[in-house]
Image 1 (cartoon, each protein chain N blue to C red):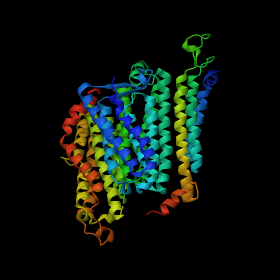
Image 2: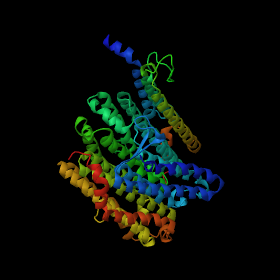
Image 3: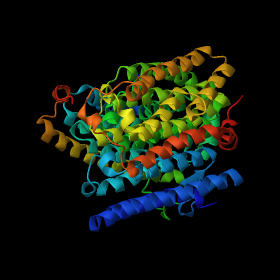
Image 4: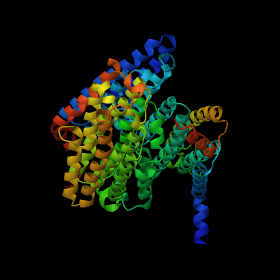
Length: 491
Length: 127
C-alpha cells in the first residue's frame, strides 16, 4: 500500500478549488495556484513512475477500505506512463499565455484555470483508478470540464460543444450500462476482483453485451472512425490550448480504457478469441486512418486539418490494439506518447500564428517561414514526425506498428500504415512548402508578422525538442516501461 | 405463455430498453436542441432505473442492520447500486446544468434552438 499512487491526482483536485477561490481575490493567484498544482502533480507523477519501475505495482486503498469493498487506486507501468504524459502536456500547455491560447484576456480566464486543472485531474483519475465505476465518475469529470473549456472559442464552439456533450453523454451512459451488466453479473466493481469473477462467465451473453456497450462508448470518446463526427467541429472551434489538450491526451485516455479493459478486467484472450473485439477495432481503425488522412488533405483551415489528422492518428492507436500482439501494442502505446507531443505542438503553433497574424487558413500562410523562423522550424520538426521521418519520434511508433503487422501476417494493415504516411506527407509537405518556398503574396498580415514572445515560443520549442529526444530515447521507454505492459499479451 | 411469463418477470428491463430507445431517438432524431437535452435526461434516467431495479429484493428491508431481521444479506436491499446512482444523478444534474447554460448562449446568439437553422447560420458566416 502506497499513497504515492494517488498523489498525482490530489494536488490537481485541491489546487483546482484553490485556483478558483484565490482567483476571485487576486488575478495572478489563480494562475500561480494552477501552475503550482501542475508542478506538484508532475513531481508526484515522475516519482510514481520511478518507483513503479523499481518496485512494481503500487496500490492505495481510499479511506483505508481494502478492495473489493473500497475504491482502489493502482499505479502500474501503464497508468504511471499515461499519468506522466497527461501532466507533462498539461503543464506545458498551461505555460502558454491565455491571450493566444484561450482567446481571452486574463480577467476572464480566472475560472478557466480551475476548469483546466479539473480536466487534467479527471484524465489522471481515469488512468490511476482500479475501480470501474470510479472510472466512470472521472470520465464524466473530465468530459464536463472539456465541454466548458471548448466554449471559450465563441458561439460556434458552443454549438460544437453541445453536440459533443450529447454524444459524450451517450458514450458515458453506454459505459455506465456496461458497468451495470458487469456489476450485476459478478457483484464487484474492483478491476482485479472482477477479472477473477469474470473468468467462469466468459460464455455469458450479458458479459458480451457489457463489453460491446463499453467499447462503443469508448469508441465515441476516442473518436474512432465512424464515431468521430463530434471531433472535427469541437477541436477546430476550441481555443488552441484546449484543442491541444483534447487532441493530445483526452482522446488517448479513452484508448487507454480500451487497453485497460483488454489487459486487466478481461484476459486478452477474451478480446482476441472469444469475442472478435480486436479484429473489429483493427479493421475499423484501418478505415479510419485512410479516411482521416484523406479528409485532412481536403481542409483549408489549419486547425480543422489538424482535427482530421487527429482522427487518423488515433486510429493508428486503434490499429495497434487491433493487431493484438506485443509489438502492435507497444506501437500503439508509443504512439500515444508521440502523438501527445506532436499534436499539442502543432495546435500551439496554430494558436501562435493566429495570435501574431490573425490568419488561420493554409493558403494565407505563404511566406511566414521567413518571418517566424523559430516557430516554423518547430513546425517542421512536428510535421516530419507526423509523417514518420527517422530520428523524430513519429517514425518509431510507426516502425513498431509495421513490425506488429508483419508479425501478425496482416499485410493490409502494413499497407494502410505506409499509404497513410504518404497521405500525411501530402498535407504536411504542402504546408512546409507554403511556409518556406512560396513567396508571400504581399499580405500585410504576413509582411508585418514577427516571431512571437518567449512565452509562446518556450512551450512550442520544448515540445519540438521533446519530439527529437523521444525519438532518440525510444528504446529506453520501450524496454523499461512498455515491454512489461505488452508482455501481458500472448505472443 | 412462456413469452408472457418472461415479460411479466422481466418487464422492468423491457421498460428500460423502451426508455433507452426513446432517449436515443430524441437525441439523434430531434431537431430542437432543447428536445435533445430532454431526451438525454430520459436516456440517463433509464439507466438509473436499471440499476435501482437490480438492487431491489422482494420483501427486502432498508439496508440498516436490525436485530429483528438478522444479518442475512438476502433480507436487505442492496445499497451499493443506490449509492452509485446517487453519484450518477449528480453527474446527470451537472451535465444538464452545463447544457442549459450552452442553450442560453446559443439562443442569445442565434435567436433559435433549431439545429438546422443554427447550422445554416454557421455556414453563412464562415470566416
